[in-house]
Image (cartoon, rainbow, N blue to C red; front, side):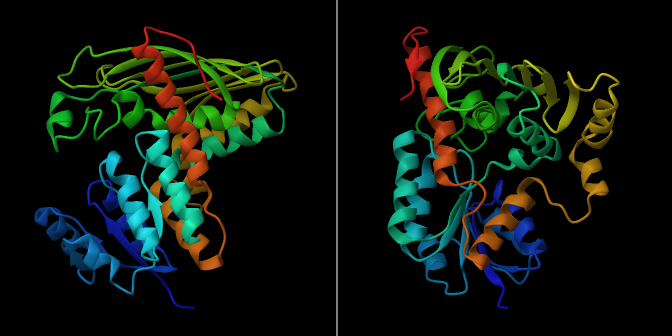
Length: 347
């Protein structure tokens, strides 16, 4: 079977996409595109057989290319994803899908218009511990989930925002700690807890010279009656944790990113299940991957998924409609905070 031709647009986080495509048994990394010649040279050193482009239109005309990863500043995602799909290319779009629900919807509309395959990068869904947590939720092991606490307590120096000139701007980044760093955890929150009903939020700039925010705090209610708190910041020196905690009538689960911390179930009185789950998932993705050879996680997982989706004619695991839900929540947080903490209802 002919291998899928893969290309990457944007060689920042796009280098992780390059690695995923190059390591796939089912694809060839045939091209990369960037305006930065230094980045192109670095990519060429790693992948010397790959064609280098500075012009996106030239990349679109390359008949070897079946899939393009869109890895540009967030506000450029819709424009370039739509152009790619209309040129007959399948796409994998980095997070966030774009910076507003309206712009994100353009990607879904183009997918429906063209029939091309479009996946979105929300790779944290495929952390080994998240797979186990999602299964526990779906099986009802926690009973009725009453409360979630989510806190992305990261740290970024000022030079992070100064580099490239687009981070921490409303026009290109769409926000700050919430839209850029915490959108993955927003996605996990709604994926695990269900459809959001309302958002009440505050935000501020505490420790950076930026236009957006470096801290948000929100109270979130869900249509199923549950409540969550959500905090994001890039001021927590030196970068502390990513808390993902669920509390239900029959059990509680706590995680820090890919590390499972707590697994308490009412029907596990001897704590054997907790001991087993912590042994499997308490040491993170790398350890779990060693115990499960051949199972991918991170960017390798999502890149392989889009490759196999195109090969097999199926939908990818994270679709534009999934990613739009996370952007709608982020948008509601910002609208609430700008309105002085007004409760924002999501339809």
